[in-house]
Amino acid sequence: MAGEKILIVDDEKSMCQYLSIMLRKEGYDVKTVHNGKKALQEIKESSLDVVITDIRMEGMDGIELLGAVKETNPSLPVIIMTAYASTKTAIDALNRGAFHYLIKRAKNDEIKMVIRNALDLHRVKNENMFLKKQLKKKDDFKEIIGKSEEIQGVFNLVNKVAETDSTILISGESGTGKELIAKAIHYRSGRANAPFVSINCGALPENLLESELFGHVKGSFTGAIRDKDGMFKVASGGTFFLDEVGETTLAIQVKLLRVLQEREIIPVGGTAPIKVDVRLIAATNADLEKAVKEERFRADLYYRLNVIPVVIPPLRDRRDDIPLLVEHFLHIASGRSGRRKTISREAMELLTAYDWPGNVRELENIVERACILQEGDEINVEDLPDKVRHHSQERRKVVMQETQMTLDELEKEYLVSVLEETNWQKKKASAILGINASTLYRKIQRYGLSQDRLKDQ
Image (tube, rainbow, N blue to C red; front, side, top):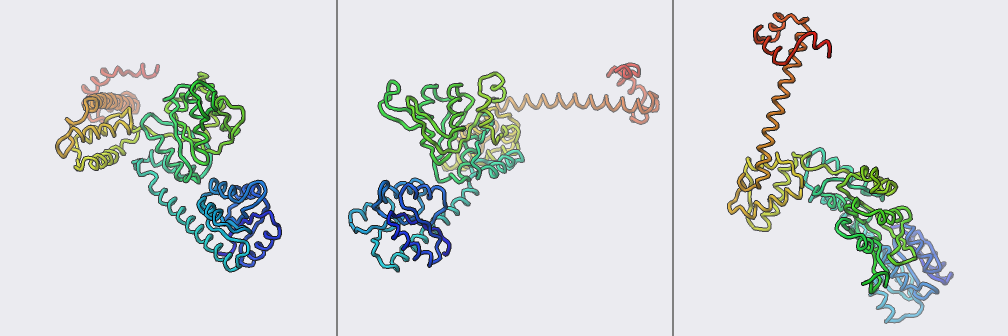
């Protein structure tokens, strides 16, 4: 296809000129550079379709450039050319991922055919990546069940921010699915083919967390018998999910701030900074604004993390999703046991009424437990934990009490409004209310109403 971009890398200017003239006549967009370092910079900054490189160059040779290309853009085809044919170097190049190996005295038609084949392969790979990405967009939320307005709002926000490279702070109670949301953002982003790396900051002591995050050099502490890459480096090119960031110490927070500001890390015991290319997604179940006020969390780091806030609602605020989640977890449990189980209407009502302090994770555990312990095909009320059954009973009592209080308040307000409207003519007021005068007197006494008292309020 005309206009496809080809980069030619050769320290012989005459060879670059010869190839560029030939390929431009074919309608290709051709760029030439004369060393591997400039080629790598061009590959990082431009959208290319094929790289053609000489194998013997000063500095970075063709094989080294090939390896760097495969790290930077694995799908970009690289054609190796040389004036000196060698079976050993040809096999080495192909084993390292070269698309083809050509000698410089090859006929023009052969060169053109190899380039067309490389472009066809690149086009197919790009189309496959696009299709996979589209499928990902459909399947990303398959583990995040919900049709409620609250969770759909989260999905819509994820769709908007995924393609950006902005830092995101996900807030939500424990068990709401913060890591699932982080993964959905990653797999819908341009970093989907790079690593998704996660770490729970609350699960490790400070010294171990620092080493895990930033790495360490040999001899930096007892037991550091070799250099170790930190998780930030492991996640290079991808997404780093920092769970429970509110649990980090102020010393760790300073280093995290450096990552966000300078895009570099310094390993424990090291002196030279290392550049990192990651998209950071942090999560917390703590109130970080409160932690900032109490000086337990750095304000500058908080504002760096909170570029795009994503708040996941607790399960009690999206009760409409509970039946969907229950059916989902029943389906999973049925797949494990080979027996399809259902749930009774009464049991479902109890689950929907419960407040779920442990959120979706707690619901999943309760459904799984019920499926294991229930020998029949239907989960009933007696298969649910005591806390779920008792909570429902207490909730009914509270609701009834609140409803009664509300009715009393409504009746009192209505009585006052009618009495005010009739200028406290009780006979006229009782007629409007549809009650006899003696009933009206009793209600006035019950609520402690009087014209003078109301004037004083």
